[in-house]
Image 1 (cartoon, rainbow, N blue to C red):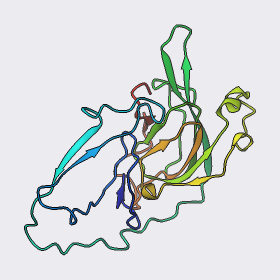
Image 2 (image 1 turned 180 degrees about the vertical axis):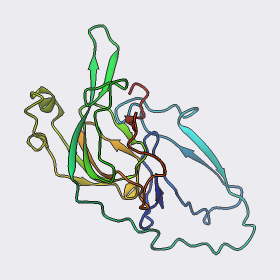
Image 3 (image 1 turned 90 degrees about the horizontal axis):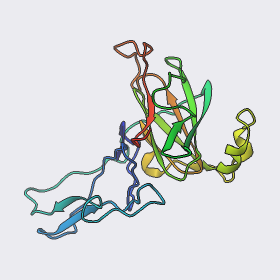
Image 4 (image 1 turned 30 degrees about the vertical axis):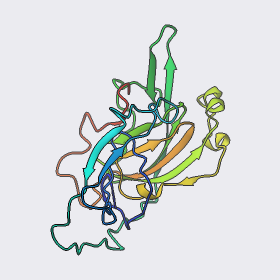
Length: 241
């Protein structure tokens, strides 16, 4: 029923949730069909790095939380409304930024992960105007999923599209019209991520598009100078970034 920034417009029923580090989900689980005393285990079966890494050890990272069903203490009259929140459509965007996620192996290692060719310590390079709306195209040229987080704002996921990562990387930096390297149709956002987000799963060899308005989602102004130095970061939740 909820994503990183609050309620979704309406509940969605899903068999499982795919969440990257830093993503959040509000869920309701119906235990009414289980007898008192039943025990369930919430598990994590996501390989790391995702999606081509090793499966989690069920004794450690694979086990998240145990749930124990107890007798009902009072009548349960709760219900989930059909409509939870109004999620306004953002746009039009005044700027589209194409930003790459890359990995580079040194001659003797180790691997360096770069955001648009830059390290964490590099000077700020993206300077959106306060109150503006932008589309960010996150071009993941690596084999792994990257959870990308924008500070201070909430955004909406537009969708994802496959890209020929090898040809894109081989092209000269000044000769990279993104449309030339796209290899599949656009895919809409997952049903469970169609709300306000601040962290998005950037899939490997794909373009993940988000739309973001650089202002409070409830309207009004920030109670501080949001444009003051040193600014607010966008980053990946993988430690190397």
